Image (cartoon, rainbow, N blue to C red):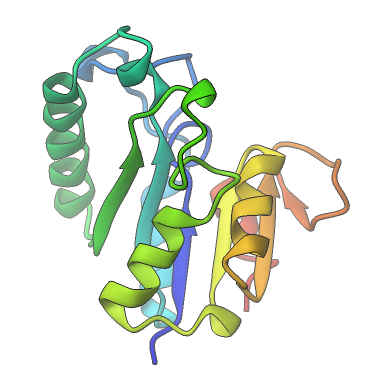
Length: 166
């Protein structure tokens, strides 16, 4: 079974500017390409799991999300990074779906699809709900970006998480 690194998008891959849905509003976080290449070199399958409630709230369309995601994946590929898959939850919080973090539906889908060993896998996110999703999926490790709360290991950035994740 493979080990994986589950990554939140906004606040981990790109700067969280609130409901980012257009290429012109998307800014990759500093050091993200180098960090992701290093994780790949360490044998981690890279999977993005992202809540996108802006779709469910009507702030942007599924098509706009897909256009931005295709662009993001292309930019990552140009910089030597391969993302196995991007899973997203388009639902608003009040819909109480099984895929919206802190629920573990997106992670469980990836675990099943790719034969991932949860015990050897990690999640990196910028909110406690990301950490809870990892716990709910039985992941072996968690890193909270930009915060020192919640009792989880923390780092200032994805690049900083390299020092936490084996």
